[in-house]
Length: 260
Image (tube, rainbow, N blue to C red):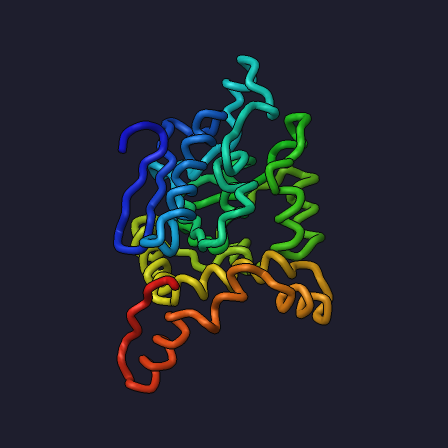
């Protein structure tokens, strides 16, 4: 598939590549195209997980296309189904997403990575939210997600000072799952995606559903929400996959998932 957003299927994995040289900046049309790629993940029963990465080695994404902004495209432009970058406000997506950060992830590019469930980063990758230095704010998830994903004081410092942070430091703060040499990035992301895709599709979606629905709640209230009729979770134990998983364990064989 040509254009600024490329898609490739590899088994149960969908690979989404943002490729807009030189900086993989994101305008509204690109957000809409990325949203359609994530919609494919959401709606295709043959897919379990996505990897999102950037073209080239220097930039994962520099974020909002400021040239488009200068030409009059404001933050209220139609971003499509998933909001900015196709993912930052895709509330209905219950399948896992891995960000394979191949270079600088700045502003909205960092927010795209934060919207993913897991992050694998190249050793040379850098992350930052420069918005306050431009007179704007990181309102595509940066101000909300970053303080929830790492120590609040460090997150606030990054946002207040616009400091760029290397992958190794963010790994120490628990934000990144794995840091690898740049030439090994996609191999590492694909290996992680394959491990995710080996799990039952319905169980993956139910896990993400429960985590999203109970985040920030006390334990007792979280139990009430979980037991209160979450649609995917409520299907898990009566599913064919639950029966298959237990049978496969008892028979010492690999399960064959159907996603139902």
